[in-house]
Image (cartoon, rainbow, N blue to C red; front, side, top):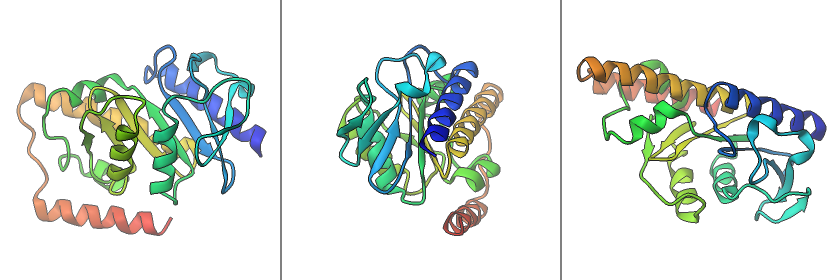
Length: 212
């Protein structure tokens, strides 16, 4: 099982790089191994060239249990996200260009695209906090209470899922939404969904999340 999970993480890291959601050593991915251990990508390794043996096993406090490298510097972000979302198994932190660009504009993103609300909840931008800090990790974990993926101001995205593929899919979805919204704002201010409809969509999202 562990070897299959290592290969799955590597496969999706390469896909993130191929899609342009990561550059060089950016980004990190993790997945629960069991109730006490988490498999995570290492620090300082190009995700397009990652190998299964490069991955690190840590405990729930971030202590390294096995591996020849050091775990990602964003390990607190992953562990807090997993603690906040016990229904999730995987975390993907990427740097999709349009999502980052939209985070710099302060434009309204939530409540415009109904399929985004149904799929990942509120489309939130977590206010800037310094990367690699517990402040950022806490802010992301709080935002994930109402979303399966969030944009980090000036930094990237964080998505959770029941599998690596699901968390990757939410990353792809949030970047696609950013592309649509970027295009819409280039034409005019997009009209949000009616507030009552947005509340209904959020209830549908919450209901489907509870049934997973």
